[in-house]
Image (cartoon, rainbow, N blue to C red; front, side, top):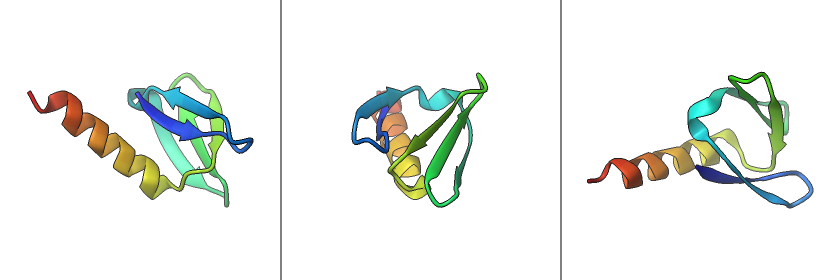
Length: 61
């Protein structure tokens, strides 16, 4: 799971495997496979980097 920040500043952990797509409009909207959407402060590039770091960490063994 990775941590993102809601627009109100509240941190939230999300399952990166459930992300279907992301768009910046100009806020970043994450759409999940479940149909839910979440608006966050991070840019798409920041979220992508968090995913890469997390995946490297869990698959490093």
